[in-house]
Image: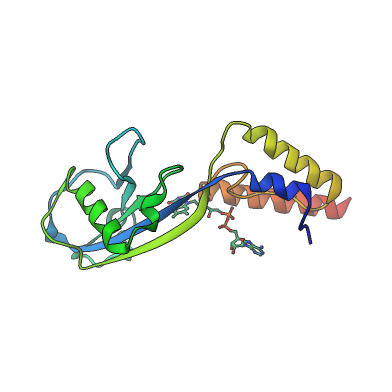
Length: 178
Ligand SMILES: Cc1cc2nc3c(=O)[nH]c(=O)nc-3n(C[C@H](O)[C@H](O)[C@H](O)COP(=O)(O)OP(=O)(O)OC[C@H]3O[C@@H](n4cnc5c(N)ncnc54)[C@H](O)[C@@H]3O)c2cc1C
C-alpha cells in the first residue's frame, strides 16, 4: 500500500540493534555466590560481552520450579552485534564466563535456549526527534487517519508501546468522529 513512499524511506533511517537472549536453567544449588537483586545492565564501557541479565526466578517466581534458577542474559548492542551471529554454544560460553566474574556458578546449565532478535531494538540517534516529526507530518498530510506509533518512535519499553497504542486508538476514534 505504501511501498515507495518517501515517508517509509525515513522510517528505514531509524536504525535498530540486533540482540540475542540466552535463557539458562540451573539447579538451585549450582549458584554458590549469588548477587542481590533481580538483574543488572552492563555499561558499554565495561569489559563484558553481556549487555544485561535478568533473574527470571526472582522477577517472576511462578514461572520457574522452586528448585531451579532461570537466568536470561542479553548479548549484542548497537555496533557490537557480531556476537549474535555466533553459534549457540559460543554465546552460552561467553555469557557463562561473564557471569562467573560476578558470581559463582559451579556447573553448566541443564539447558540453554538462545533466541536471536535481529534489528529489533530501535536506536534514537541524533536527529530522531526531527525524523519522527517529519514522519508524523507526512502521515497527517498524505495519509489522514493513519497514525504512527511503537518502539521506533516514542520509547521501546513495553509500557511506552502500550501507551502509544492507546493514544493511537484515541486519535483514530477522534478522526472517525470528525
Ligand atoms: C529481546 C528483547 C527483550 C525485551 N525486553 C523488554 C523488557 O524486559 N521490558 C520492556 O519493557 N521491553 C522490552 N523489550 C522491548 C519491547 O518488547 C519492544 O520495544 C516492544 O514489544 C515493541 O512493540 P511494538 O508494538 O512497537 O513492535 P512489535 O512488538 O515488534 O510489533 C510489531 C508487529 O507488527 C507486525 N508486522 C511487522 N511488519 C508487518 C507487516 N509488514 N505487515 C503486518 N504486520 C507486520 C509484527 O509481526 C509484530 O507483531 C524487549 C525487546 C527485545 C527485542
